[in-house]
Length: 139
Image (tube, rainbow, N blue to C red; front, side):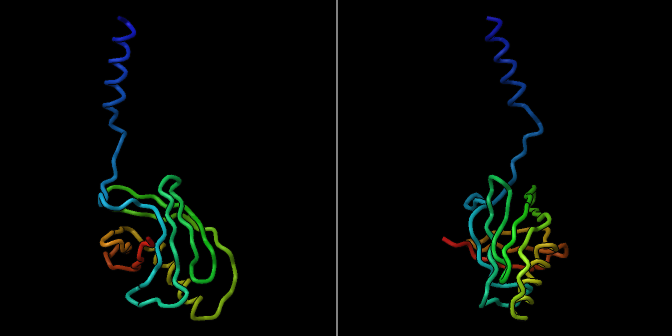
């Protein structure tokens, strides 16, 4: 009887834990998978498109930034806020147009504050609410 009473009390304590939070997101989207960037700062990217690979379980992001490979952490919080940590990246030099794309890509990630998902397109917004990056989820 004491064991049953103890289990009921423990269930109540655990189920009422106020520190458990659920991040509200579009129910049809899981924040993981591969994305290909097709627009940076309202400019179409058609060659050497950067990629993003999100791993929801480990909260890691990685990919190719047009020339160099990169990896780092990200965090998602309530109200579709997103923040990227410091990135590790290779240091290969490519032709100037590719390096311009890569620089814009990392700038966009560093400025990002919010995200939105519609029709499998990830849009990242800066602190002013301006879209800085659009990426299509690969199927």
